[in-house]
Image (cartoon, rainbow, N blue to C red; front, side):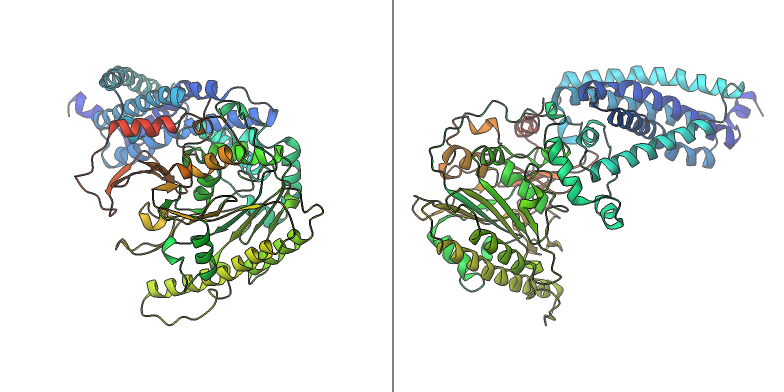
Length: 598
């Protein structure tokens, strides 16, 4: 056997050890490059936040630099223990990973979001040329590094690394533990760091800790309000872009928002929902309306903020309420909110929309049954018992058809699961229609001179396999059945009218801020939408779910997933070669996802 052959057939253990140390060295390189994220984040404002940032930073880049190499090269070293093969693959992988990280730091420094396939679609040729040059340079560097690590290993200059591995594991557990505590207690100096690290998904356990009795949710909310919602780390956001100039004439009307979870526009009719249908006929009915999300969380976010769902994490971490709620509080509106499903998960509007509202002004249903009836009763008690009936109020009612006795625990005879689910859904929304009727009748019977703007909407749609792809429910695709939603208003002083242009939840904040509160700023200062009554159809909107998001156009949909994967779909939600990426449209979307960051 020649000397070269003997060297190529090194024992498996040596190659596995080399893989481990090569990964550790690359983790250090990843961390060195990743310091740009720390500069973007700034210096944390407390000792616990400094500790968390340090632990999370070290642990995340140890994972990014070490784990992929170990997962891919470890089995290769065992199955094919040839030094040349293992090292070549390792060098290529490490070079590619470090190149991608360098590109990501540049993108994040400029746009405040991480690189994805969609981002790459708008790269200039010079960017690709520079990326290729960096990759070649890193190939040469990683080749030398790989050889150096091997020589150190052969000479016995590298220890087994057990202690270092233990320290990194402890750093990971420490960071996760601090984040679990910070998320549960709404400590934004810690949680606001999440979006700064690439592929970082820290753990949460707020509900579990509350069930165990380790935290008191009410005490947490009081402490959070004392700290000031949106105060910590607010320098990360540029929201609004310019100071608002609002001089709405007094008296402004009361505002009542009735939100019905997953109410489909085509199910608003005289048979299923007679009271809602009558209300739509007498008000301003937007019949071609879309939500900014296929889930409650993103649908409500788009409705109150008018922003792409990609901003949700930042606003949640910083607990920044929308400018609409700022205006209500500045004008001394009495705010009261009632929800059949609560304000926490999944919508988590306790730390977004109602982040600055005292928890005592938020009522969550607690009954095991008929939670919708419970919040109607609670609302009526609040409405009739107000100390000053002439003081303007903002009231929010959130109904869930699935929490109605008519749809819970009732055996439904149907041939298929789809028909079963559909019948249960119809019964649920019919029951909610009765609750809406009670609220509207109570409002109509009030003895007050102040008029009330009533907004009735759904957070998103609901699908019963209309696409023929097996989807039932919501939160699973960006087709029209899950995005089409209800929006009806009874605006004091406006004639009843049916609007057929393509409108969206993103248009609501601009409409209220400009026409109700007299804000002279361009809507673009605080929203991505327009104004509902302008009658202009959107060319594209951003829609989101819990992890993915999409650019939705009338004839095509571009879906982006975690990790940068994208899917090009036609209007029927099928992949097709006819759908092409439009760099101009992608650039517009990227800019909209960047504008409200510092």
